[in-house]
Length: 634
Image 1: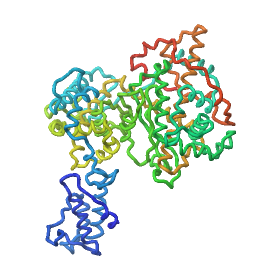
Image 2: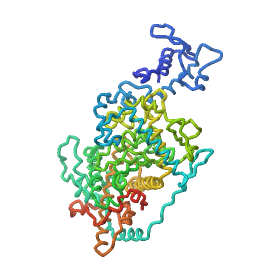
Image 3: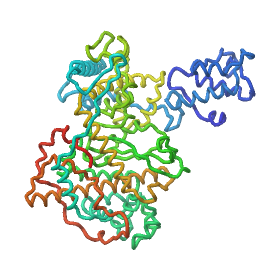
Image 4: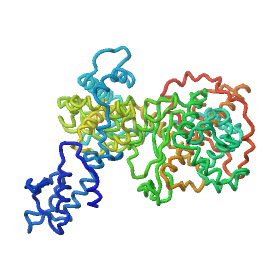
């Protein structure tokens, strides 16, 4: 282990290099068996004083010493202490590996301030920090004043509205808030009747037929081809690409699929998937389907595309690969398919990530990689989205993060100033004068915050890499301290809004219900091989979840068209369709979808008639977002 680490060029990314100094001290005395001296030496053998181990906890400092050898450290214990702390510093970015991608000094990848300064005016308007045409200077003081004003206003509104907030009770001693349990409204009989009538009129569809028809309409299959970029030398590229998408989307192996589909071989299906489909091309095809879905009038019944919910679902894999880990939550090996689901039910982006990672770091990344016409500004997530750095980065990038809130007793509210006190909600903020925002720290690091935000937006540094580094809470990392402080402001504002706004709570619940329903729907589509991803290559595993996302989105798109056609039939028969009732009909319908049996390819040769995207329903009454997003998922 020592020889391996010695071959790496390790550098400290802050002025504090004590861990690396202790590591180099260990290397100098690697031949020592039981004890190594406390005092260090330079390359010329000169005494450099006692090696500073104050970076370690008191327990570590105690265990490396031996009372019988007051001038020495116990070698094995010292080595364990150094390795433990070195691993922690590598994880949080306080130590970097020269030439590495994962453990590089990410701060060196940021844009320089002159570049940021030139792009800042346009960026501020883009993320909503400035109104168009406002040419007033926006500096550190203006940024702090904006945050302070928002926090002050949110706290004042929560305090003044508390007596009328019947659904909220704050314990005056502990400060723990209790919200009245949300109960979903009973569905209107007219909505239930409309849904049942529509379901009865939906035609039976096969998954392969759905893919073929959407491929004719949207032409997503044209995204695929050889890596060379030349025309595919296939006798029937359309048919081959549709069948390959179907086989991989349902998670059936190519040779097993060849037993059920006439005219294709396992070798052909395997070679096509490997040589003609890539992650980038699958993303483009998924985007084509998302854009087509956004053009349908029916999608307006469910949302306007301004909100998205992010969540992951477990996917089983075999254990002998680089990505799979045994999930603590599920108790079996696998990975996580992490989806970003729009308020219109369609999946904007999908990742495949290991079970052991912190899912919250992918909340922002999926939105940045989303290239569709749907560009959400509000993000809903599960409880993992409550981290300070995630709130901070979302705010700096112009997104409003609003996760589902649980475990209120573990959450801290922060005051604008030490002198600030409140009449009704004082106990939320703890003892008087405590839990106060450090505005000076935010102002001091304004340039660092802007450099990070514009670098992430410009693709210079990955938001995943950034949040992994900022998660650790390194005391040496100035970027972490600044992000944490901004995150404290934004999270406190959102927590106060969550407590005082019942409609917000309904929207969050509805959004997270949609992504959970999508997880179940995509799993229903991915029925092959008992849902287990057989690939051990991380790239192929990523492709597997994207094949499934493409097939699932095509099914959502086609079902939306079928629902619209059923509505047109009802209108022709004299039904007056209420858009509020129609909003309760989810496209995650499975009753008329045939998954099993012999897979006929006859529909590949039958071009469908053009579909009708328009629907004669007045959706204007649904433009109030509260009504749309509060609709239950069928």
